[in-house]
Image (cartoon, rainbow, N blue to C red):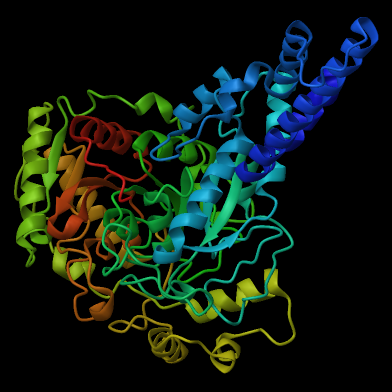
Length: 563
């Protein structure tokens, strides 16, 4: 009897909370009825009297104990409300190990939260209908093995330009609105193998065209959860807004020039743009593949590091990852050092900091420098890179046309979808996307020096020269990192996203040089709008950036939930 009710309990764990309570209530009614009838039979047989409402209390108590134990067992606390707000991977794994809740209940809590809150934010493009099934399998595995994988049962939100088997990968476009990849992208495979649960896909700027805002033809406009009148930035604004709103534990974004760090800064998140070549881009709808990276967007440095630890490494389908061989440490967790700023030398790129900043953002940045000094860092002011303006010019090569053709040929495989002209023919609901498509149709080379080949970060002469100048100055001054605000200005209002697009420092260095750049929350301006500070490091020096950003985060604790 006990095992029977336990099977029922396991089935109920995969249902929503209303169904669970309804079944429990029905069970209690049935129990009382059985008890009444049983008592009646006993009384009639033994005493010859028909006292229908007499209760045999010892027997009733025993029945209650058996049924309650079989339903709840050692999991009585599972019936408690789960508040997923600001939960970290460590928090969740501790709860799994203690039996406080399981992954099915956590996934349901996130789904409930999305259902209650995303109607105003519009960050989610697709819920994974199999999320609870995946969670159930992981719960059963843990019950059998008593071992948690690195990301066991951790709900993941994936930007809608990353291939996920069984879910549409649309890049926010009409052309791909019914494209279901045959296989997961390389990094999704690695995350799922580590135990992550893809709970949802997130909205994005169509084709990743816009760093300013996140508007798609499939879902529409995503709003900043800290202030709904403002943008979450682009193009990974859906991931930024959803992770900030606690709709999942960890998120993935892509970054051509801004799109991990911008939305992370605008949504009080940690965002890692890693060294080009450290993480595979296979299975990702490209913008400019020569600049594209994919990386974590999380609420804490520690969680971002745990994601990075899973996704970093060589992929034979992305030749750029060959450059990472021999440059990845045994683990990245070792760099989570609260004292990481002690003795660090931090250089300030004043040419970016002082470029027409918003007064409040500027004040937050100056406070961040002071905070780092208090933690034992030495701040080196006014770092000047030789020929910075000249080297930073004419770095972009709009390779969207050729990169898109390769993606269609490799993954989409449709007779009606081969080229940029095909997506122009199919159309868009966004005026911004339409104008971007028209630009891409007529431009594919450098505007200033079209004769110079557009190569990757390891072969392009202009990119290499820019990086060498920066790292030479860092070596000369013995700097651990360079810092500047991720954006010099506040998030723009949605109604004026183009006019108020100002101060985007993300575009200027790392997309071209290939260097890693991490953004971390540095506080809030008026109107409850977040701002971020960015740490720029040497190639494959993620360990140093982890130490610095983690130490700063732990000392300041600027992150807060919007809702």
